[in-house]
Length: 344
Image (cartoon, rainbow, N blue to C red; front, side, top):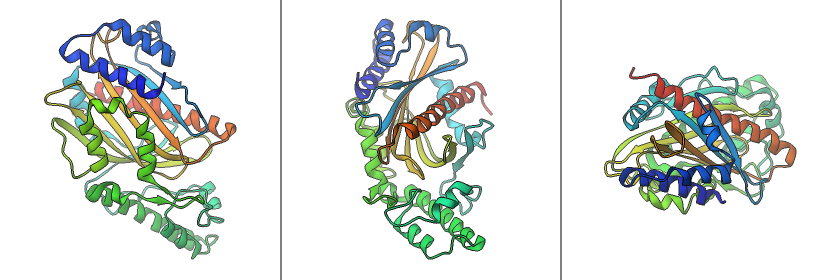
């Protein structure tokens, strides 16, 4: 089953809950056939979570996953939890998350002050050239880098400062004009616009997102659009350790509880920058209330589509995939724990 058909079925079930109820067997069969998640898996889930990879025609170009976590929550408590998420996100004790920070609106001058280049990145940047760089940068940043003697500590710090400022400008520009501010990566012979990477990841959801086109219109036209309903959104940046190169990502999260719903609740995370590996990434979630599955309780289902910024060989793909699975687990864990914290 394709990712789009899987997500279409999930969101159709979420929609059916509101007005008509739902046959719980259908989605259970879907989860088992497409993701290998059985009813017994759900019944024994407890306070853990399940993450499974979905099949792709060419796994060297990307990754698709489904994650499930059981929530002790109803729609009101879930939305209330998301409304306080931005105030609770901070550095994580999880080994695989090196940093996790909400970006203010408008972004402050010191938003990325805590970000430090690793020694691996510093060594890689010594040989960085336009069209041949082991870090995703703009042409201006690469030219700045080439104007410095990166082996000198002062010049290395000068580039770090320029990189942090460029990231802050990216966040501010995105908050002000949206996708127009996204970078064109010049680390490979062929330039890649971050917007094209986002659209490529979005294409995998194409059929299902017709169920809520206002969400997609918002992500494509932000900040010029408004969504009807209770909306929580913010930008955040994180550093994830994928076992080879810690990866800085900047993301836009939107969670919506519509006023006149065709579905009960949806959450979408859009990647707007990653300094390694990712050409584009979209994570979408639906909240399935009691009775949607043939197992007690309510569940959050996340479906993740990621496009690599080039074909990865099998060895590197195995390393990166493990890190991405860990990242999905951390997202599920964060949402579960957030719901359990109660009002602050």
